[in-house]
Image 1 (cartoon, one colour):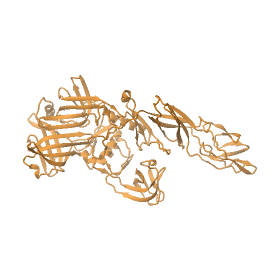
Image 2: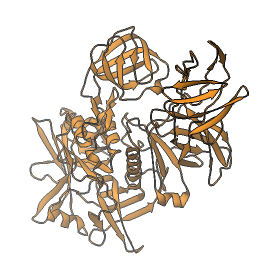
Image 3: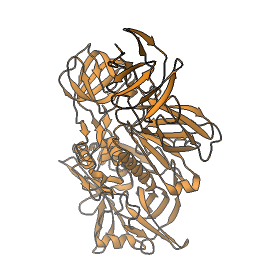
Image 4: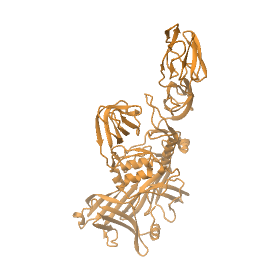
Length: 634
């Protein structure tokens, strides 16, 4: 909240007063001052003003008296504007408080009711940021991309012939883009990622830099904000960090080509429990949206209000699942998993889940923290409504205000989500929209891009439809203990059961040792589902050359079919029956062609079959257990 002169505070709280509005326009050379009272050399031309501001945007419509055709030859387009609201105070003296900087983008003449007016449309610096682009320097590699989803943003891409390297910044159906490039990629080679390639490159195109870049977990969110706003704002000031000091976090940020600065500011702040506003000093101020903070200004007996509409909504969705990637049909699975929820909303209306995918997540703890900040951002906006008051000159977006309603015998406090200030003959009023970005009474939109100040970088829209029901969970499977074929089986029961058979998304939390388990849903009903697990990629190699037991098969997959060579004298005959080994117990027994054999799982180990033995130097690959995550949605 802006600090006001004591005389201005007294004047705005008085039962009556004389409004004062000052508009100062300058291009750095010429300055023109217009006001409502011809004070201090200003020209008395201000007829009406409507100024609104909300998170990430604001503008003003200013109408000036042009009855003498003063503006016929005076073009103010592009002029910087300082808009100040105030009163005639004791002294007498006119005292004011200025809003964030504006500039004139449109000027037109209007004839109305016998008057000639000039109307100025002014935008704030958020519009500059919305139309400022970040373009990352790098290289576009055009080739064959079989499955774009298998790439991971931020992974290293290497040319298989040139040895050139770069970090992946974006993927399309026919190309990938890399930044931070070392060396030179060439056509015809493959550009290899960790698990997939952009094959047979047909074109290698350099992209020019224009203020963009990447931040590979080496720069704090605060310093990224400073870097991307330096061409528009004079500085970024951290007034108060959140309780988890998230503004000091160092995220992985890969800037897509053509990203807008305002969009990136919004994405960065969503990683924290903070909000940001541009203030009258032309700086971006970051502040913690603490729900427990006290009111900075109260409308009560000292500063009355005219009307007060208020309610407390619920957030929809009220539970969020953060993962680094969604499972795919070709076996790609989520590695990290985090859940957060608003217990208050859940107790009132039940659970409504949404899934957020962030490929930069590198741990469960990071996923949980992202979920908690996601919920906090929405909880900070659940108090909704509107308060109409006589003009208050110092309030800013996100200020915590109090309202004491003696008729309802209640005092509430809530953050200002939008401010509309009006001046015209007979009207000097401030209307405060409560609750951040609220648009729908009774619910917080899940589409937080839906704000009135959209200018191309965010899509306005209605809230997403939540799922009918949803249940996330995490379970553990012990490998090789449940079935004779060595694969684990586990049945999970839904509580409560669904009314119909749901969809089940199953993903792996991570590798166990060097083995990546494969999980398959084998049975699904409205009350439960069953999963089966096995190791991936098992093969068998080798074979006996004699009856000494040397050169036996190396078993790298416990479910793999493999062949034993039976020795008859100096000759070998093949026993090709496919069979399974149990690999969780210390020993197991299985039948092959009517002959049973036993083995101990050791390194090396031996087993006898129809009189021959062999030694396997590497032994069997064992996998004790794995964690997996699942989500069921009807």
